[in-house]
Amino acid sequence: MKLLISSCLLGEDVRYDGGNSSIAMGASFTFSQKELFMDILCDNEIYSFCPEVSGGLTTPREPAELVSSNKPFKVLTKEQNDVTINFLLGAKNALDLCQNEDIKVALLKSKSPSCGNEKIYDGNFNGTLVEGKGLTARLLEENGVVVFNETQLKEFNKFIKTNS
Ligand code: SF4
Image (cartoon, rainbow, N blue to C red; front, side, top):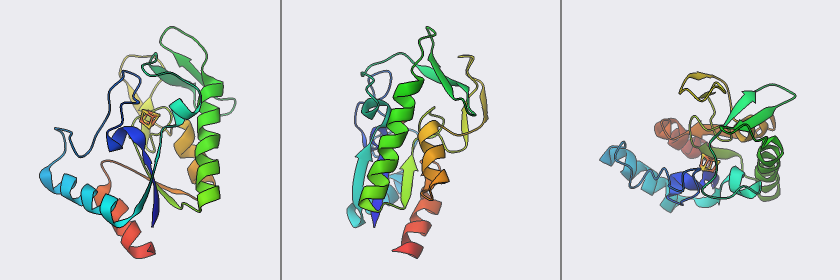
């Protein structure tokens, strides 16, 4: 099955701070989670994607948060630079990829203003999480792509098995 996966979860150094959020190498994942993730990678066709890089932002880059998570969306960096258009472009590019390649499911990084599918930071840069979705996760879900995050590997795997 074709799977869209956040590049940072695959170990690519595309995070705002120049690092990654590798599941395979991350200390916060158990061996069985890593094993499951590696099985998923080996058994499926993987499309690595980073919306923020695709949207034209550099790595490393200033941290950004969603200041308005409903239309009109607004994404500002910590220094108050407006990067909304980059985030929207990245989301659109992710959707184009899914539609062009018939990708129906994605594993995206939690809590990101682009990739988060359940919670995001509240726009005040003080570490407070609120219910909400990143712009890419939202656009994909609105268009029928099912989105999981890295804490939902079992559910992600179950979806793959059921729909392959
Ligand atoms: S935009 Fe998504 S894929 Fe890119 S670094 Fe942030 S969480 Fe990872």
